[in-house]
Image 1 (cartoon, helix red, strand yellow):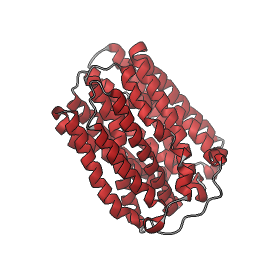
Image 2: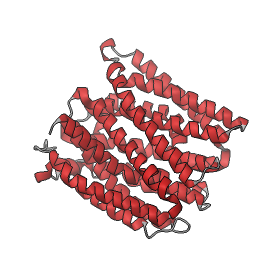
Image 3: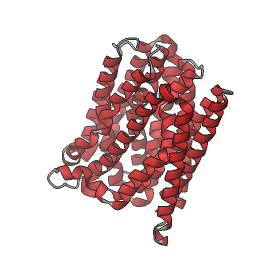
Image 4: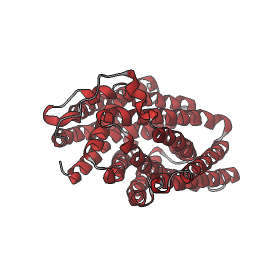
Length: 403
């Protein structure tokens, strides 16, 4: 397939995967908060994200099985989209006022499908993209995810939220069905034979972390991202608590937030190509720390909380997707060609698990200690992470400092 076709296929596939992911993380909490559920109850939604963090368990199967007319990874992508559609239909019969367990269960199944699709899509991307185009592929993944948020927020939540939960979930299911039709046409572009991996072993799950550069990327990116992950994961709660309605929260947090994320993901790509992913992560960590600290001060002052919440949500959205582009551009060349889905997904799964833990703890702590201490702690960790990356980069040979 041509490079342009591959990049646009990646974009559309990631958008289809992002619909249920964005609704899980950002849409559902809006409805639950509006129904009066406590932050600790809303944090149960993060349980639905567990399969996404555990997708590395079946990633070796994705590397080893599948193929035919849809290519080495196409069958998994199509099947995943079908299961996601069924899960979304299940949400139509739930009630956010009292069926939190049913909602979490349906989202749990949906995230299994999303995780499988993401692993297969990433493997297909790495398999066909040469090294100089890794940042471009990562930016298209990030752009697809943010575009899903734009579709969800503008065409569904903002326009349809006042019509109720069933209307919103049925609309999302219809969008998923349309994207499934596209996937059935687009995935055959993944032609060719897979690189046969060795017999599946438990050691495959941690093989990527035997690479020193991957271990460093995991640890330092996690530390650096705390200052933006906390407000990003809490944005639905912050907007509702600032006095916005569900439709307004969807417009600000999902539509405008993802628009900023889309711009950031595409704008940072040439910067990654020029300066290297590590240097961009330093800059992102410093901006995240400064943003969180400034927001903490303004929350402490208690003035114009609505404006503070909007600014915090939009800036952290941009930082999250810019960080994704830089992080994945560093990660992709570290993956073994015989374990593309496994290596990439193992790294991403452990990273997602750590981020979900931070997000869940932040949700629980919000009602107990307040937003100001959370933001101050996040600011300190992001600044520390940026400093550690800078120190590590300074010790590298000059010829490697732009990688």
